[in-house]
Length: 203
Image 1 (cartoon, one colour):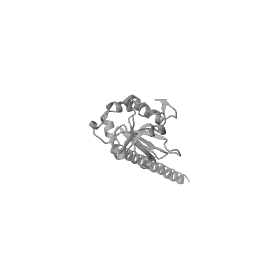
Image 2 (tube, one colour):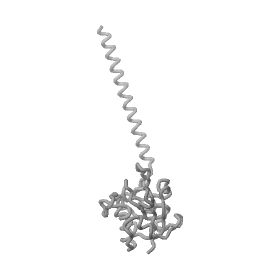
Image 3 (tube, rainbow, N blue to C red):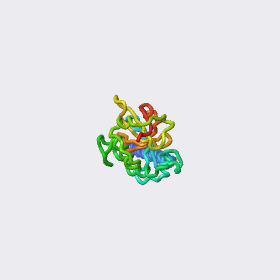
Image 4 (cartoon, rainbow, N blue to C red):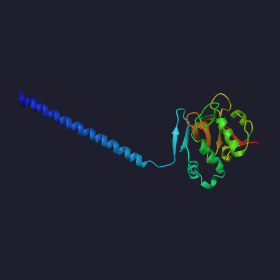
């Protein structure tokens, strides 16, 4: 009887050691895999996102980005960023949250933000709403857009309900309802599907 008890005890200890070692091996493999993934990722000042609505964009670091960072995200040379004050202004607002009717960095909507950019950078007073802004542009094809031009979208039943500022290489600046002030791409299927009008503002 005593022999059987010791035999049972030895088997239990063997099982315990076996499962303990197995757990260490599995955890070790998982850590190695994660470390490998981390080191294989490209180090950059920007990251991509896709929100629940399907909209996509690019986040720079929220503040203190250099002109080189913006050139990298826009896919152009630094010398192509002619209006440096525009990018310094963008950097002050990057990541500011969306708030319908908001007018400050603690919360702002798309048309108010675009109006703020135009007032400070181009000394132009735009209409308050995106629909009214769209009535005062000289229409262009997307291939002819220049830095500072306006791009308009229709996400709802109304003809125009969102506005952004074109930058370079199909990238535009706007206020996402999910991510706030962000840079996105008009060729992305989400935005391309709803792009309604674009062009330069008629002074």
